[in-house]
Image (cartoon, rainbow, N blue to C red; front, side):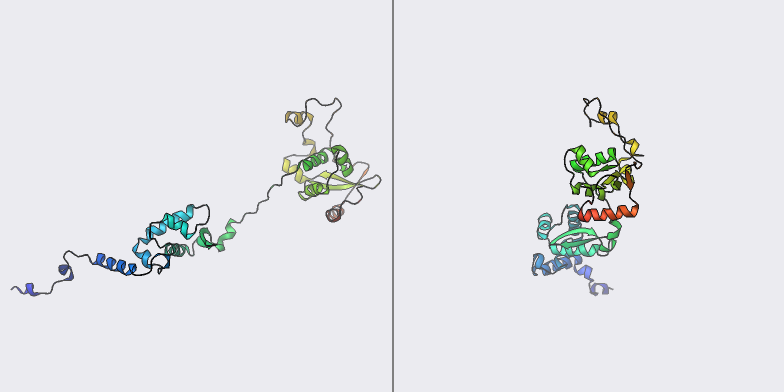
Length: 266
C-alpha cells in the first residue's frame, strides 16, 4: 500500500533546508533590534545575542590589566562596536560576586579589589624608616661617641645650638635615652645610646663603633687630621660625676621634656 505517502510530514521534512535554531536566533535578533540600543537597553537582551561570554572575557582582561579604575566610556572604546557595556559590566560583577575579588564601582569607574571580608589577609604592619636630618645625624654621632654627654656639651662640639626637635626625634626613635644628671651646677641631664641603636646598626656593643682608621677608610674623615685628633671612647658606665635615672624617673622626665622642654639643662 501507499498509505505512507499520505502520512503527515515531520517538521524536519517540512523544512528540509531550514535551521530551527538559526531561525530562533534570527527572531531574537529582530526583537532586540526593536528595543533601545546601547546602555539604555535592558541588560542581558543585547548581551545574550552578542556572544556574551567573549565580551565578558574581554572586559575582564581590560579591567584586570588596568593600572587604575576604568569608566564605561574607556571600556566602550576597547570593546566591539555596539557593545552594551553596562550589561557586560553587570554580568562581570555577577560573575565575581562572592569570589575572593570583586568588581566594584569607585567614583563612576570600575576596578577589581579584594573582597571586603578578606581584607585582613592582606593587612601588613610595616615601620617606615625615618630619614634623619644632618643635624640629627651629627647629634646622634656625638652622643654615641661622647656618652654620657649633656646638651650643652653637644652644642659645644657642634658649634651650634641643638634644637629640641632633633632630640625629640632621636628619643622617639628610641636610639638615645636619658641616662641621668651630671653633678654640676644646674644638674644637666646626660644622654646615651640604647640597645635599639646597637640593634639597628648591628653593633654588639658601643666598643664596636668604628675608630679613626675605619672612619678614614669609609671616607668619613679627612686623611689630614690634627696630630692630637682622637675618637673618644664612649663611657658606658656612670662616671663619678653622674647620677643615673631609674626607669621610672627617666620615663617621667621624658614626658615632661616632650611636653614642656628640658628642665635643668640650661
